[in-house]
Structure formats: structure tokens, C-alpha cells
Image 1 (cartoon, rainbow, N blue to C red):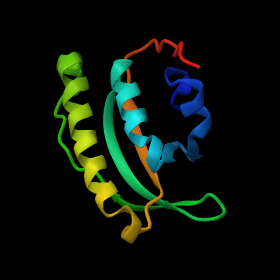
Image 2 (cartoon, one colour; image 1 turned 45 degrees about the horizontal axis):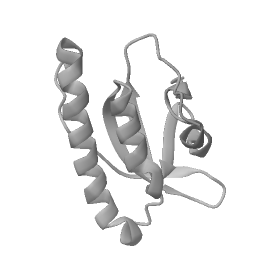
Image 3 (tube, rainbow, N blue to C red; image 1 turned 60 degrees about the vertical axis):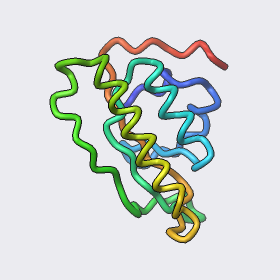
Image 4 (tube, helix red, strand yellow; image 1 turned 180 degrees about the vertical axis):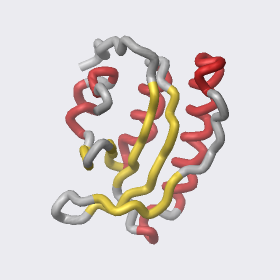
Amino acid sequence: MKDLSILPEHLHEAALVAGGDFGWPLELAAEVVQTLADAGAVVTGVEAWSVDEEGVPASVGWSSYDLDDYAADWKASVETARVEAETVLAGVLETATEDEVNYIGIDWDHPEPVEASEEP
């Protein structure tokens, strides 16, 4: 399981955990992407979710950007992935209402060790 301590407390608490996946309400997704990038994480995927009243997510769509061997140049990959994730997120937000998207699943990779966020 991913270590959510990389995120500030309000983002950690807002996370919806579904198996090994993590999602956030639409209004927090851009902040999560930016916070992960600021912490040196490579955002490896963004997925549109429709979460029902019982908290069960269904995937509506997902990103398809190519990061190649992102570990080869980690710092450049962090920025490339941030831009790609923000682009995908902007597209999802355009049709969120009609697609019944209310959460965004976000996946990332981070070199060890993870430093805990100091933000509340």
C-alpha cells in the first residue's frame, strides 16, 4: 500500500481507499497532483471514478500518457508526469457532470524513503 504521509493531513483524510487504489473528490484532485509532484513523486496515472452512495468506485476512464523509463531521469519525469496528469484532469473535469464522475483515482511512484508532509 502507498504511504499517504507524503500528503498533508486534509488530503490524507479525504482519500477514498479502494483496494490498493486511492481517489479524491474532484475539487481536491489538482491539489493532490501538485502536492505529489512538489514532494518528488511521479504521477503514473489518473482515473475518472463514479463513486456510488456506498463508497464503491467504478472506473469511467483513465489516462494514457507514456512516461517511458521514468526512473532514468526522475526529476524530469516528475515534471512531465505533473503536466500530463493536469492535462488529463482538465479533460475529465470538462465532462465530469455528464459522465457522473465525482472522484479522481491517482497513482504515483516515489523513491524511498518518503518524507512525511509537514503541512497540516
